[in-house]
Amino acid sequence: MSSAVHTTRTLAVNLRVREDIRSLIDRAAQAQGKSRSEFMIDAARRAAEEALLDQTLVRVDQETWDYFVSVLDNPPANEGYERLMRAPRPWES
Image (cartoon, rainbow, N blue to C red; front, side, top):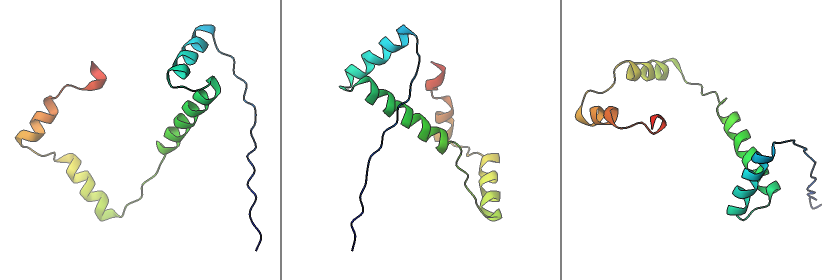
């Protein structure tokens, strides 16, 4: 049996940013105990994952789709739902 050899190859990515943005990134990286590179790589990786997850396609059969649409077209009418709809929206504060 042969053992698999894993090599980690890194590539350079060069970015030009305004001084104020670089200072902001440096402060945030320091607050998390990371280097600028570590912080930027983590942030870019998370953004890339979110962008790809936003593109996820979910396939369902016709019966499931019809049920989903009927639930959207006929929201519940009870006190819990009404309270939820009156709750403050975090994105509007």
